[in-house]
Image (cartoon, rainbow, N blue to C red; front, side, top):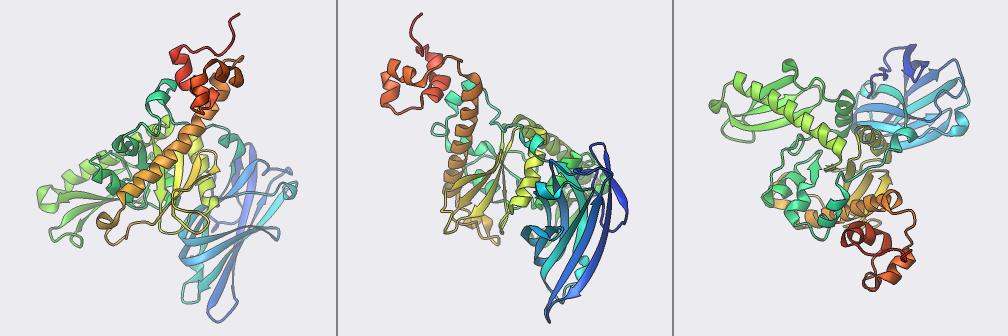
Length: 422
């Protein structure tokens, strides 16, 4: 969460949104609805001196629960969102304009279907924030390549290896990393073989990984479970990044591996932030349960702040979304559906690399087409006439090319005519 977020454990605290000081108060209540189900409701109020203080913003909540449940968020009795939750999430929720012309907003966050054996007090709103959404989202995503590169990096012209190098994993599974390795490519990516919840990735982006190299926040333990020979296992505790070093305990001292791990995290985080800014990589996030739109909205804001990179949420196919389906959720945020994920117990043996390549090619095709379509608006000559271009270039018409895209990628380089001589 951003720096203006506060914990709900404190009452009558203030956050600053723009130039407005907003008072936040929160109070949890617990009620028993049935023999086996407990409902915990946390109510909090946002107050400001002037009405309409939340216009143009979305409500951001960092939610924590020790179990699988449903989180229902409402404003003055009107339900805004119902999100399935597994332990934690950062949610960005749309606020209805009609309810915002006031100096006070009263929200309820209900944790529904929590088993009674679970300590309901551990269900909490860990942080609250109001963040501008639309102005941030107006920044267009991009592939981060020049117009000349569009000619050489067409989706149908890239080899499987070159294609998969354009993608980077955000976790929370190593499946993409294994598919890349099976193609004999090993990009250096911060979370390629890590399992980091999306909420903590967003927290790290808000913090710009500023504390990733703090020695005390980088922990080392001996992992003797996954390998009969103990290996060093690293963990960045602030940003929740696990890392199997692959170094046996007898091969390097604690001090040496700690130093190297801190340096690695620092280098890889800088690389990650740089790639977010340039848009040259497409970032995939997958997990074993669906990613709600409210979670993707929170991620979209962070990605647009940094630049033009695309984020793709991977999900297993269903009846409404056959394998290979790619759909837009927010500007620069897509969902893509794969036949099924690898078995978490044996990822290396069950990852289906050809299907990953096929889906990544479909993702790249959609992004490539979207990016080029935006350039059509800004880069075409003002007097370009698509119909006339096709009349003057019959081979383009016969090939059923889009006139505008053809001219941008090929036509101007080949010196093709797009207007009648003066």
